[in-house]
Image 1: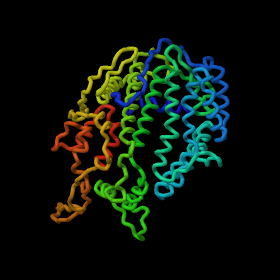
Image 2: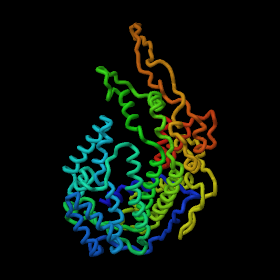
Image 3: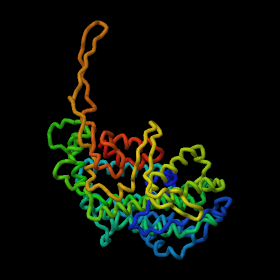
Image 4: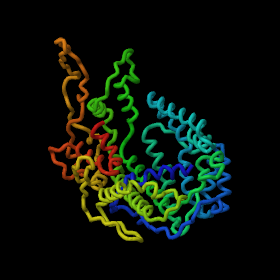
Length: 489
């Protein structure tokens, strides 16, 4: 199961939300980086430790969710006694314990919104069918049951009754497991000797029975990529915890009514949802507190910033180590597979360092990443050539008190329908009506709310133009998906 994380990490190599300024409050340890010095020529079962083989065989036989949980508890308790290859497996497998009964625990909360519940049930039904028909082993089925089936009586798990219970879940149950995983992975030295990964752990005993392509090597780049993603996950948890979300389900119910769902009217006219209608729902008194900053929200945003900085450093090391390592077809991360895209990826790496590097230089055993103290980077659109200065440090250290303030303030007006006159070849005139699709489109925003993010944005400039530049520069667009929603909800 943990290999699924590693597989997904490859595509996230340079798409992590990353920062490179060290916050004053932060006492996070500096990144220690050791370059690979040797490598194994091939990956095979001969290089698996006896303890790894024993634990793998036990894991692959598990079909019952309770036994899976008992297994996770046991390997967590025995972590220090294992060799390096087992420690890597254990460090990434133990955090899956947070998924226990999480779907069942969400049942009451999902029931508050019929459409939301129906969507979730549909996804789960299709997932269950897909696992049954397409997965060659029982591991996915076991984890599916682990996440969806009820917990045992007497367990400490609580059902989610309101939206903020999900925030509590991530902060008290998920976050500690990720923090432990980070410390464990950091302490593993893979610079002088790689470890072997058995892909059957991902797909079960029915997979790779002929042994072809079954084993892969994990070294320093793979380790750093895991650390980058784990730190980015922590950053996301702290950011998610920073703002009030109670009332979000009721908000979605009100939006659904505009689309014609969950309406008590016998005949409900289905309407399109313009940005203005969306913002109008946000402005209702009952949603005043929704997305306002929580009591410790400003501090959590700073912590999010610091963890994203760590993610950036590890991502940078991963990319550079990939370029320098000797070619080995058994490695999970291979430069020859992405070599044709080197120019774009190099520019992406440079862009990220510039964008999120307004702080201290990042030092390691192999040198220093050049970052100018206090410099606010100029980001260029690869499409239009336009530029904009972006201060992510300013945004996270001075987070908005209310995220709703980032929404559009004025909208395009006009008639709901437009009418045109068309004269045919026979001289006859006809009139046609069509929808005015720009009616309700965002027109202006409160520049004051964006000053920490875009410090040089002029009053006659559109906020949307600045966001567009970010979206059209290498890699940085993925970071600004939330901003795109804010300017055009």
